[in-house]
View 1 (cartoon, rainbow, N blue to C red):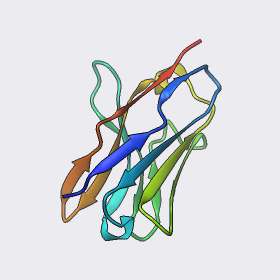
View 2: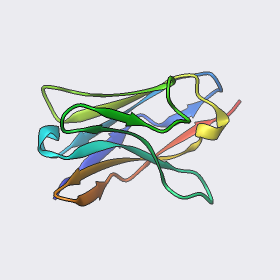
View 3: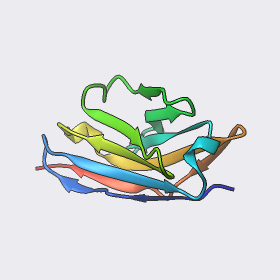
Length: 115
């Protein structure tokens, strides 16, 4: 079992920045992947960015160049730095961890981009 605790969501104006954090109850190096998904109202949950055990990162095309996923090499936390935010980035953001082909989810944090 892996517990995930998220923080950092909120309301931001278009063009602004936010940083999301996700702390896992286990070492991130024991996980296959860890990262973020998001779900807007009426939409399916979609991948935003993930990092693999080996350190490779994958981003959705819609966030490339604006979002950066990093991990704490000494601990159990990943960070999603979001810049140049757009209204279409508005969604509930969920932290995800995969271990032994099982998916674990955080409770979700709301990100709203609006003027």
